Image (cartoon, rainbow, N blue to C red; front, side, top):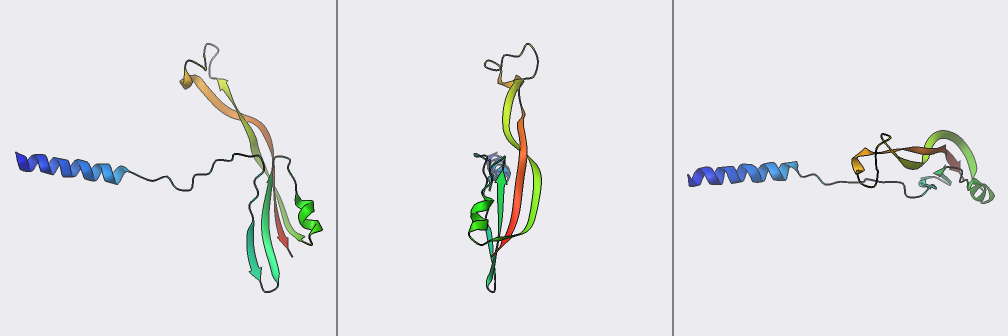
Length: 116
């Protein structure tokens, strides 16, 4: 009987340990402006990729600093979200299960590849 208890405990522990996963690299946008800069050195030339979201545009700072635009890409992006009730009778404060989150404002994300 003792052997069966130990065997069951070992099985439960291995199931528990194998089911645990760590969350890695989850990023949630907290601001409307996302600036991602990746630098690559090519001899004397430098390249960077910059992203501006939802109406923010700071590309003029880089152009004034001597950077040249190699590529420009524009993509649609959700800027803000809003919560709405799922049905007419839904009280979002009392029943959290009837709340639906959907896009509020949709804007553009501009991606620039620059070279200096």
